[in-house]
Length: 194
Image (cartoon, rainbow, N blue to C red; front, side):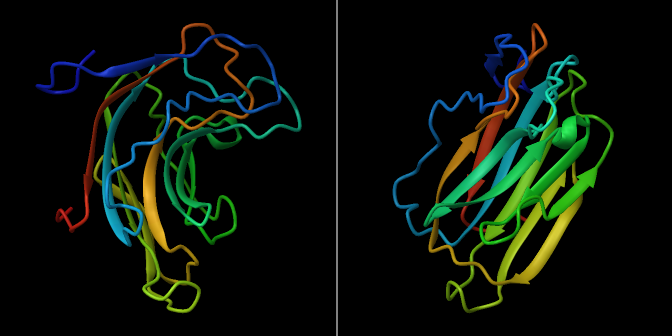
């Protein structure tokens, strides 16, 4: 499977690990870029495709069920996050910014676990004066529709330093043949004009 005119995509095949209540992750390492230790604002576009049998709920009560789809790592130790399949529900997303309470900004759309390419866009802006200035922002789009648009936030982050694709899944895959394809990732430090 390739996206558009690109010659290749990256596919990850999830092994069947059964109903486990522990983190299971791909984590090949984040995408790190020179000079980004102190990036204060970035725009990210990820094109990905989930197999039609994708699932985040392995049937284990008391475990979180979601797929940590895209993280934008910040210093010191925070993240902007987009999680797919929250509570095991296809099409249910939860997001947050580094200093917020987990899963603050949620939305539900038709399932993206449909074997089709989808475009995910994110805009992350840290506070100009960490912990003081209420000018941080967090926005998330799926297929051109903005679902999260918050601003005037106070954030404690001092810089965005990496992008993690497919960080982890809390319950572990319980379905044979689950895949995620990554078609392309683009990053800007100036507004691309979405």
